[in-house]
Length: 383
Image 1 (cartoon, rainbow, N blue to C red):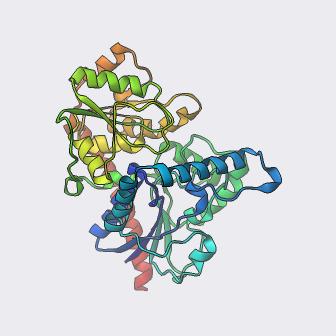
Image 2: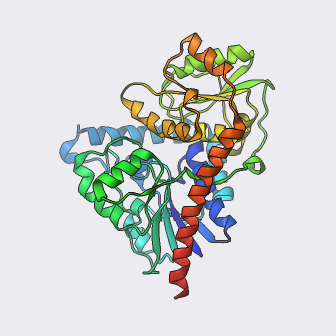
């Protein structure tokens, strides 16, 4: 079976790369020929085009911010870490040229697959500067006109979708042959818009049970450390991480974040993706506000706490809470840095046998969906 995957495989983001790695690896384990469709539109990270007719619009401000961030990271970011991300994409995701920037370039590439998969990450989240991208709903033509098109665990990244996108979103989703989403809220959104209830499947990282073979050691100044993987903000998570490190009498490490606009949390380290896993695996404790930081902590059986993101981005917590509820770990979520709250999480042990059983059930659900879709695609090929 020839499988093509559409996702955010190009981001210098640890979580994005490991969800991509896991989905590709699952298909490889089924003896499929699988590759990422190397679609990398400018609007996702570089902002896209500025609209001159409305120069000071919110859309243009977003474009300008992304362009500035991209240039800042390119010229002033850690060059070695950038090379490490590129190496990981090349060696462990199998990314090769050419790169497609537009739907037109994609359609003229004469691609040929038996199964197309869009997922995971927030590929269905309308961007301020671009809106919905049909490519991430697999709405483009390839050589094989009978290709099966399915979603696997895409996320909307929010609890509701702006009404201006409702009709377009419903139309794009209904063109898929198989529909799944990552969160319960996503099930509600799709059901409300289309009348179809999609299956809720776990993030691709959960499809794999063992990541030990991909880890790479990282030289540490201290053998004992707490690992903090924080995104978006330092609010609350900084205080929680420092308190946890003090409790263990350990160093506090946090990986370099090119978008950080806040005081660093502990000591900044510059791991490659494989070393990021190593630092998490060998930590005394993990503090995170990230979905994939949470998912990998659970898969590695590391004691952890998830700190809620505050303010207008609090909706991002829904993704993490959905996973914690599935795993029976809602108590690992904190919304404050009160000493008694931190002490309670540190004191409460995790019954990993129970949690691993819950995760195994999730893994089985995701695998069953994908195997069913592969079987349906094979029936078409065999006709």
